[in-house]
Image 1: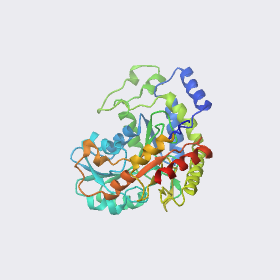
Image 2: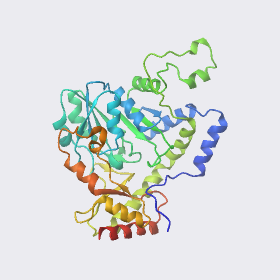
Image 3: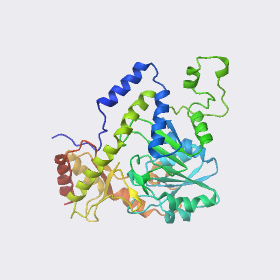
Image 4: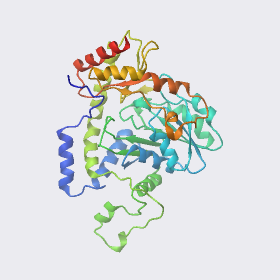
Length: 376
């Protein structure tokens, strides 16, 4: 019996040819294909600027720097998120302050954030959890009059829609992931978007050690003292390669088909799971999800999620535990300032089902049969 994986990226011959062409070009580091990918991604979102980087974590790090967050500041974040969300806050010397989330969407709301705002709050990181769009407008209306910035962690949300626009299209700063578990993948990689040209230029310098002139621009100028770079602030090596960007350009063209397929398969899961008491994630009223993660909340009568995962694995179904709670992990244990009951319920009683472009109806039937048996 073959195992049904939780995720397989949709990669094929077109991506292989694009990567090979980048290799044959002789320019494999950050160069013209990265710039082309940035332009295409910004156009897709309808934003002025996109800066390609090595991961969503590095995108979040740069976004927080761009928002002026530093030592002594506080940043409100959901605990219900991959630990990188909180880690990026610690990278800039600030303190992550964990907020609870909405039980239906898994996202921050003004009601969960407001009690945690203080005079030291410099930013809020609003995560589109599992691809479900966060209600950004309400958070910005709450936070921005206080002089803080809402940074959108759209790691999972390429292809999701918020109030008729691509997720991140209205954000002051947003960060995206191109990890293999995301719909649009470059292997590893990320993007940070912003609306300010001067800030975009600074972020491009910071991703390349703080160089005043990029390596690609120096190469194009064919040397000469006029293109010598300076280093005016401490930067990082957060560059994307042209090989990755070549793959990303192909993936971006396929994104609408990816989203349509995943939404169709998710709806079929919903129909098959009717009557089990399990609740599958759904679209919020303000947008639509790309179903990057097909997570469901187990019914109260079900065994715990670890028992269910073990039962699924025994039947060749590779599901995953629910979204983690960062405040329960060792680096942040004991730091939560308020109870987080919804977060702890969702991380304890939810799991993620297999969902990918090539998933067949027969495989879905196997998943659901195994899940029904595990639920008793």
